[in-house]
Length: 306
Image (cartoon, rainbow, N blue to C red; front, side, top):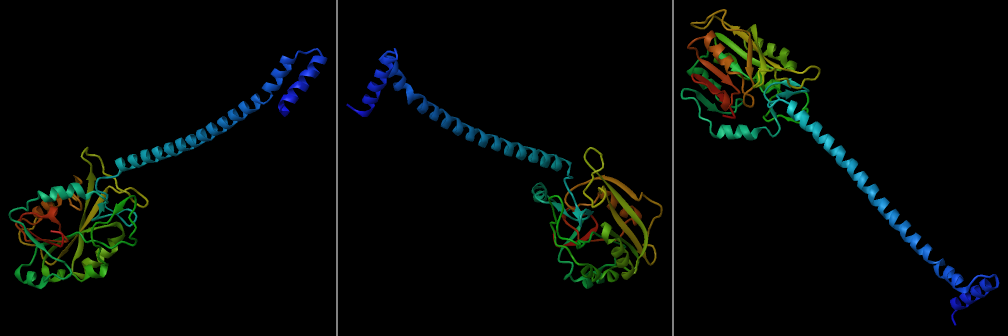
């Protein structure tokens, strides 16, 4: 007889004396350990399920937060201009949106230069300007300098896609050798106005006017870019003149405001070239820091990205 049998018999005897039958006592003893085992399993299962539920809820919160962030990023990208020429916390000039070169690269693969343009692929810092100056004196010089920024940290995903030049390098360009009389057009960003005026004086030009390009989207709305204080929707081109008017120069033509869509990376509005050609018909035109999408018939274009 085992110890458990003795316990059952003892309890049965006690129950008999108290008037209870032994089967009922045996039933109570038999069931005394069963509820404990069942409850322990239920509690363990409940704790396990609760832990898994907590993990799932935490994961759900993470996914919701990620989805909300992605939604905000998509909305920001939809509001960002296709070409955001942001410089120095919002200065606009010759720049590019990171990753925006794929479509342009496809366009340039199919690019055909205008028949009567004169492209010169060269580093403007080492190019033999003296030889060019001996061959031709220009009536108009146009440039979009790659101004060096005060900071190299682009804003809102914008990256600078070309080499920037310190002001002292731009100063060294032998512009006075290239033109005795005529006009200069300089695209400028907000924090380089003073420097652009200084360059004009160094090269013998006097400021006479400026042209504002109001950028537009394909829907003819203003294409706002990111600025430091204000959103920018325009670029400015300063106009200087030295010496006498070039032959055939016309006065009071066109407008000093251009409303035009943005085009390719760093591509300035075609209306500016048309304005220059109207100002000085059949002139000798030179563009410095030009790119493929700036090439134009009857223009000499010098740049290292042609």
